[in-house]
Length: 37
Image 1 (cartoon, rainbow, N blue to C red):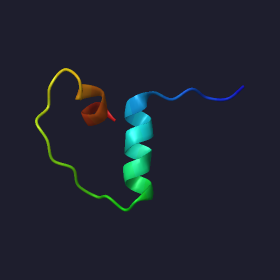
Image 2: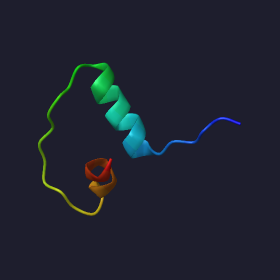
Image 3: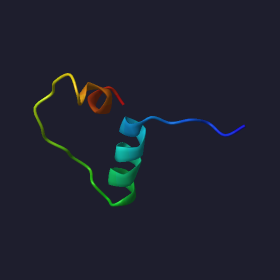
Image 4: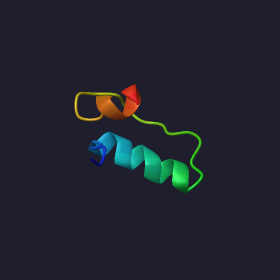
């Protein structure tokens, strides 16, 4: 069975794959899962 991943994990993996080391933003309800990863 394939492991399911959420949207935050997809975004973070894409950032890592493209060499991004730092991200900046305003934490809030919609993006909290990204900051939690």
